[in-house]
Amino acid sequence: MSSSIFDSDSNSRFRSKSQAQFQSHSQVSNVFRNNSGSVVVKAVLGVVALALGGLILFSFSKGCNHQPGIGYNQGYQPEQPIPFDHSLHAGQNQIQCKYCHNQVERSTHSNIPALSTCMNCHLVVKTDSPLIQKMREAYDKGDSIPWVKVHMLPDHVKFNHSAHLEKIEKHTGEIACKTCHGPIETMKVVYQHSTLSMGWCVNCHREPQYSAPLNCSTCHH
Ligand code: HEC
Ligand code: HEC
Ligand code: HEC
Ligand code: HEC
Ligand code: HEC
Image (tube, rainbow, N blue to C red; front, side, top):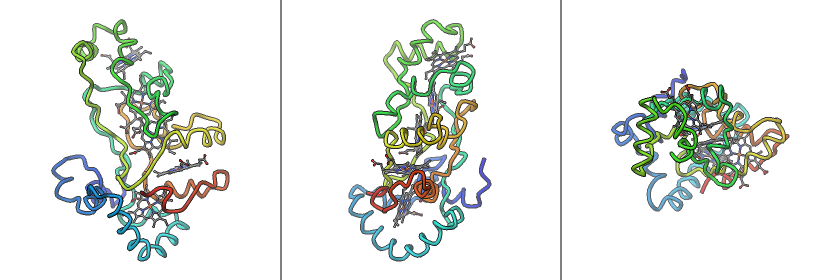
């Protein structure tokens, strides 16, 4: 989807489409993903902050989007074990985002719905479909669907869904999901709409109507 020249490089840094690629090219993220992560990250950030401070501050004013290695995975659209269609469910049938992603207001993470949420409808809806029968089988066995994660920040970044929703909704007057995830209700297959780069976060935090925190420790462990 994206034409960024940094894509192939950045995909391998934090999460890649193939595990093999991930393992061979992830030295940088291994530093951050180390078990003693927070100490290492603090040390690394301390050093890097000095070196990059000027560059980062400069980049902020330029939008940060052209710095090498930034702009991870925009457009990433993995295949899912069951071809779940948001445009059919959230679009055509107008099922609310928060009906399925029902932890998003309460929790740091926005959950993927449990199979039981699907079966609220699909015990009776479209039961002649082989896909629905596959779901029914898993449901009866107590299995879950191994959905492939689309959005993923590196481990050294803190993000909290519930903290974002109210302010953004108050300002934009519409459901906040769209601001960051784009028109999910039109997507047959979900893809990553925003860059999720540091510049993307910071640019919004700097908007005067939000004046959200900008200090490094807000977003980094
Ligand atoms: C009927 C249930 C249902 C509804 C309604 C629904 N979703 Fe989803 N959503 C899912 C499932 C299942 C997945 C995991 C499979 C996939 O990625 O397609 C998912 C995945 C996602 C993802 C990607 C998560 C990741 O892995 O990073 C986002 C973002 C998302 N939904 C946002 C929304 C938004 C915004 C709405 C409302 C416009 C919405 N969803 C409505 C069930 C639902
Ligand atoms: C509120 C009701 C509702 C919920 C909850 C719901 N669905 Fe659906 N689903 C529908 C409707 C309505 C259709 C369209 C049926 C038709 O084409 O007649 C559909 C169609 C589908 C299809 C297409 C089947 C086919 O072969 O055409 C799949 C796959 C599917 N849903 C998966 C899911 C999954 C996975 C979940 C849970 C994350 C889910 N649904 C939750 C109502 C729901
Ligand atoms: C301020 C931007 C922003 C808003 C608003 C937002 N999201 Fe997200 N969403 C993200 C980011 C960033 C991630 C990746 C988080 C991570 O990897 O820890 C994400 C991840 C997700 C995921 C994958 C599970 C997870 O938590 O990692 C789902 C599902 C999701 N969002 C749904 C929603 C829904 C539904 C809404 C609206 C109610 C919403 N999001 C609003 C930025 C946002
Ligand atoms: C569309 C605008 C927008 C984007 C994009 C955005 N934020 Fe925010 N963020 C906000 C606002 C507004 C607040 C302040 C909320 C408040 O004051 O209640 C905030 C607050 C936060 C907080 C503090 C939460 C708390 O518990 O007080 C963290 C951490 C944060 N954002 C991280 C991120 C990260 C990381 C990203 C990028 C992956 C990001 N944000 C992207 C608007 C945004
Ligand atoms: C609003 C949230 C936010 C704030 C504030 C923030 N960062 Fe980040 N930072 C991120 C996100 C998200 C990433 C991961 C994506 C990326 O690398 O662009 C990141 C990545 C980084 C990286 C790794 C870059 C790489 O290429 O591996 C460094 C180093 C960093 N930040 C340092 C800082 C410093 C120093 C500050 C304070 C001046 C700061 N950050 C403030 C969100 C933030």
